Image (cartoon, rainbow, N blue to C red):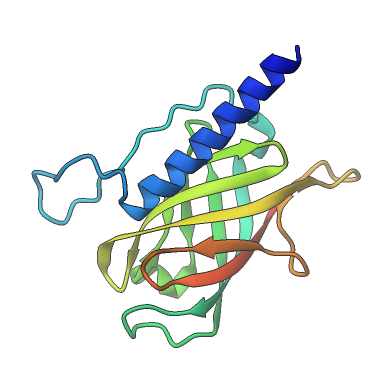
Length: 170
């Protein structure tokens, strides 16, 4: 039994690592035939994603370091993210969605959620990043949260975009 637990933890850690490397372009799998098309660097299949996490969340992103001069940090954006049962996620951040539109794939391992991201930033669809946060479940409402205002998750991108984030299930 113990080796089975270690194996599943190892597999989850490997999947998160692959997502992180994929979002940075370190594992890019070739060029697109259509110039400018965003292609996922790595396809991660995660059968049995936690069904309770699927849904729409109120999302707050605090950008502490901007990129390419199109963001003057610090800045806070709010909107929604939607986790889908196929392991993908999308977002809507209101007015800034025209130049910052994150989305990608997600998985949960233990008490951590990781969202791998290939996003359009400053109208350039070649950026990537990784969001990570602690998953908690409200005992009263049964709703999930990723990080919190007092203990947010992190956003890290090799393209000079850094910040913190949190989300609460609607």
